[in-house]
Image 1 (cartoon, rainbow, N blue to C red):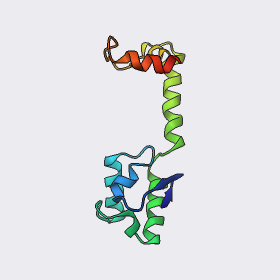
Image 2 (image 1 turned 30 degrees about the horizontal axis):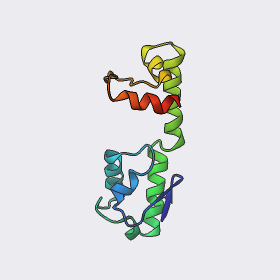
Image 3 (image 1 turned 90 degrees about the horizontal axis):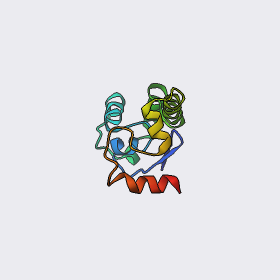
Image 4 (image 1 turned 90 degrees about the vertical axis):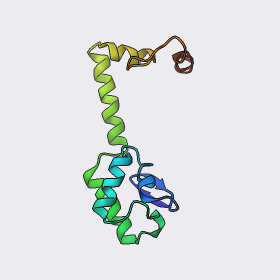
Length: 116
C-alpha cells in the first residue's frame, strides 16, 4: 500500500486508476502525472521503485490541489452562493438539485435523506 496525500493507494491497481483515488485528481490529471513521471499508465503501482513513488508524491503535492484544499475550495464556493442569496445557494440549503434537474420523481429520495 502506497500512502500519498493522506490516501492509501492499492499497489495492485494501475497507476492512473490509483491516482484517481486521491480526492481532486481525475482521469485526465492522472494521465498527465504518468506522462511527467515517464511511466506507462498501465503500469501497476506496486512495480514502481521507491524513488519513483517519492517522485510521484512530489509531483502531486507540487502541481495539483488535492484533499482538504479542494474540499475547502468547494465548501467556500457553496458558502459564497448561500451568502449572496443566489438561486443556486438556496437550492443547496434546501438539499435540492442545483443544476436544473427534475424534482418530481428522482429528487424525492434525495430530499428525504437530507432532511432526516
